[in-house]
Image 1 (cartoon, rainbow, N blue to C red):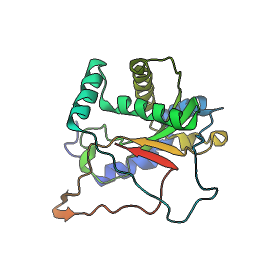
Image 2 (cartoon, rainbow, N blue to C red):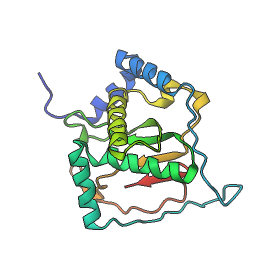
Image 3 (cartoon, rainbow, N blue to C red):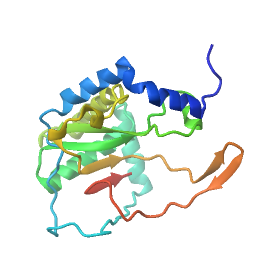
Image 4 (cartoon, rainbow, N blue to C red):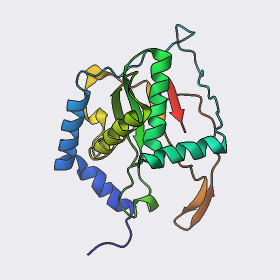
Length: 212
């Protein structure tokens, strides 16, 4: 028997019992092994010695349609989605500005793989951490494949988050990558319709975040 529609109560039961499952414990072991000894901080160039209050700023960049088409064609040729391709380009850019070859970057994961979960309210979003050494002589397509495989392996272990593994020595990631397909600002919840306005944030989740 498969329930036709998941509800908020299903989410509550799932969240309450999650830490008691073998999948959760296996994921914690995965993140402990992956992050032990990893430096989660990227040394970014800065023009200020101290952080300023409400200093968060955004720089919008626009990709021309032909650039987007070329990126999609390259991703298709490598049999991947845009996510690992853009993530790879983001890592290369971080390497260029920081000079740091061993990079660790956080990235959000929607966590709504179960059919029907997209229709219920609940905080399924979790955060993965990608650790990658940039090799200057490595081709971009090779880097994309490495990033792609690592993201798939992370996905299998995101029942727990890197924070659940409590690897304090790696620190908190100060760079984040995010590829969004678009945020719906209009819709329905139950029988009620809603429309929201997205406002710029005065705070930042990281020193620098690339949102594509």
